[in-house]
Length: 289
Image 1: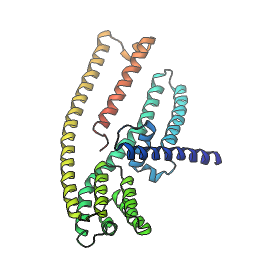
Image 2: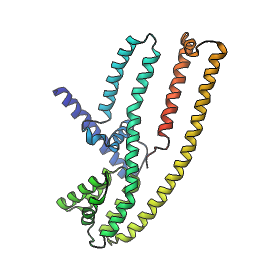
Image 3: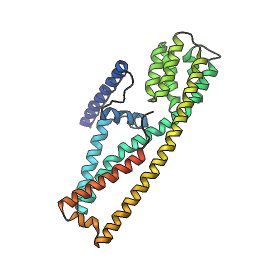
Image 4: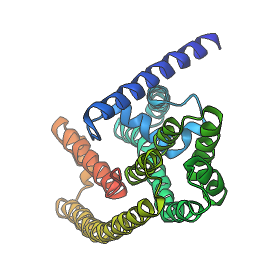
């Protein structure tokens, strides 16, 4: 138990170091897509909401967990199947599944944020007519928001009231939600609060920006849907050709490939490509917003 706690503390320290390094790069270079694999995995864990449910979870603990599960599964399946093919395929699927699931959960939360952005802007605009203090405005607005914006907005309100540092409260608010457009809106609100405090103009510009952003996402979604259909047709035709080859030679082609080293390599390569295509079909268009 003590060793596990020490290991978790060590991995959390590393995760915090990666987070600080990412923030430093953002401040120095602006937004950049160039992130290490561990940093991207940390971001997906946080964005998916799994960090809230499992505080110990970070990139390193996830990788260690996958490695342990893979090793146990491989040893178990190796005793059940004479061929290495099935154990290796199962291990490959188990290896890819967690990162794919995290990406899907992360993008689901981003869609939830997309749905709330216009509502957030409208609330800011409405309550700005009764107050010119952005923290007060957020405090009156957050109860009408849905997650994940609601909790982040409430924490921003409480921090702003407790510390009196509006800029830092808004900066922390933007960091809690990993969404480019949301960060832009909060940054504009922060600038506005320090100068003219005319939130109507910020709300109008932000609303137009979000409308154009959502329209662009819908257009990309239609293109991606067509691409998925085309890839599925190609996959289906490939399977048909694979079956026909087996009919021509009068033998199970998978068993035939397993009888030689080169055939086994071809079989593993083909299976890897199929798994890669399936993952691509699932994650297609799931890029960061």
